[in-house]
Length: 214
Picture 1 (cartoon, rainbow, N blue to C red):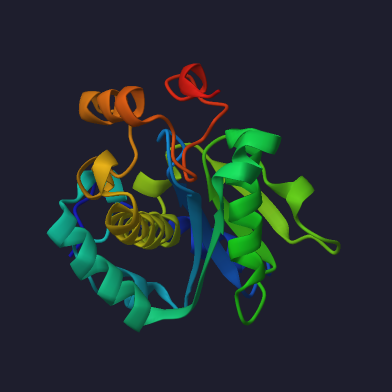
Picture 2: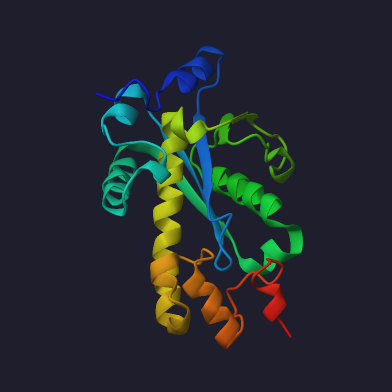
């Protein structure tokens, strides 16, 4: 049973009562790092029972890495549909991190089958401009990853996917320690950039990286 303070399926049921048959929750991971992509995920659950059958399902930031892996496996098995999209550093530098995050969200939702006619998005910004017409009904929900089960599920899928990518990048660029800090601005990461300069997956428009670009 979910704790009273955890996410619920209420928002999905509310949208269903409004006539929306496919309600997706969408979230992203990786807005703050100095390196690597921003990754978004979209999740549709068939019903409340499927969504709530894993009591650990919550905002990914409230879970340990081991818990996130457990919830990730649950979501993959329980979801009616899920999708993932990424926006790489060169595009982040071109359009800025906010728009890159919103674009990733829209692209993740676009991979779902069936396509959602209602999208619940974590945060206070809408990715509407990044959806092709006809757009679904879109609702930003502030702190949605702690309130809405499908958004919480998307937060976990996005976080686990991105962390795995950064471990892969660590093998390619071992001098930066990506497996440990996942590209976030830890002091060890800043020191590595100062010593070695940026690598191809660094976000050159970000403070902490741009000072070291030639």
